[in-house]
Image (cartoon, rainbow, N blue to C red):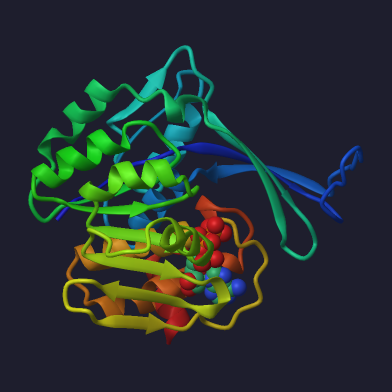
Length: 288
Ligand code: ATP
């Protein structure tokens, strides 16, 4: 089956510093690099590294073809990415200290200006058994999720960055709701009753991950693998993309959780976000 992803594409400008700056402080960075990021781009890269060819729905500024070419080179179908003449490509300023703590500023740019009609037209061939990934960094999520569910596809929604109003609107069209621990806490406070979804995927950083099947009532847990993290940016996206790809190819939930945990553990031992996501071969070798 096929994976689709309506998601943000960012250029990540990464600065390594001795410590995160205080208000009013000017700091010289120890190093600087530009990498691929954005929750959407990261999830597409993860799904591609796990062995699928995700079709990415999104937008970049028309001057930034390089970013599309880099995504293509990683095995993503970019034919439906819109090149917008009047928008800046989404980008993030990522500050990392020597303890791998981070501070991040995001400018959404083109990610929030995706043409809905063109996006829905690209999505019109999604069908039963396919998967649509969505997150909270673009416009058009409700329209895409509704269309995908009407076509019989599964919708995996990462409620990040957490916005309760967005969650409430999208929830009726979601199959699997994916969150980290903090997002889950906010969600359960805001919506204490039953959720109208089939499954909940909750990640807890170094404390592992859990999938709750709300139809059977069964919970599946997987501990995190013990590693020395270098940069945890994109761990949740690595997990979500691997989980989507593995369940899409028919792996059972426990296998998908194990592979996603291994891929995310490896990813946090590398610098960067999208380009730090390991391929399936490296992930399987890590598990040997
Ligand atoms: P981010 O916002 O940094 O992308 P997140 O908060 O969405 O991440 P986390 O819950 O921190 O997501 O991490 C997702 C998964 O990645 C975890 O469930 C775990 O499997 C793996 N992981 C994260 N941090 C570590 C770590 N320090 N050691 C091993 N595995 C980790």
